[in-house]
Length: 198
Image (cartoon, helix red, strand yellow):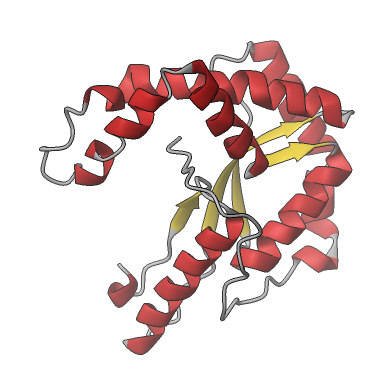
C-alpha cells in the first residue's frame, strides 16, 4: 500500500511510539517511490469523564470486556484463521486470545490497552490527543465511545462530554490545525511484550 501511495488507518493496539515507528517506515517506503501519503488516520477508544477515576473505571471495566466481545465475534482463540489465506495475521492471535482466558492475563492486557487509548477528563483527552498527533502526525482521529457491551446511556454520556468539551478545542485551537510529519519515531517509554489485539 505504501508503494501505491495510499494513506493508512492505524488502530491503536500498541504503544504510541511503536505505532509511530510503523508510520515513519510506511512514509519512508512511500517517499522512496515518489509518493507523499496523507497523515495517518488513527482509530482509538475514548473514555471521557468528569473525573479521572470515573474515566479509568469505565475503561478498565468495558474495554476489559471488549476482549470477550471480539473473541465471541472472530473466535480468535480457537486458531481457525491461521490457515485461511489472507487471515494469517489473525491466526497468530490465537495464543494471545487463549491467554486472555486467564483472569490475571486479561487484567494485565486490559491495563496495557487502557494506557494506549484516550482516557481521562476532557482536559486529559485534549492533552493525550495532542501527544498522539505529535507522535504520529495524524490529522484525523476516529473515536469509539461504545465498547465491550457498555450500556447505551454510559456510552452516550461518554460521547456527549467529549463532543461538548473536547471536540470544540480540536476543531478551533490552532495547535491542532497542522500536524507535524514525524521523520523519526520516539523511543518507547517501557518495554513490554503485550500487544492489544482489539
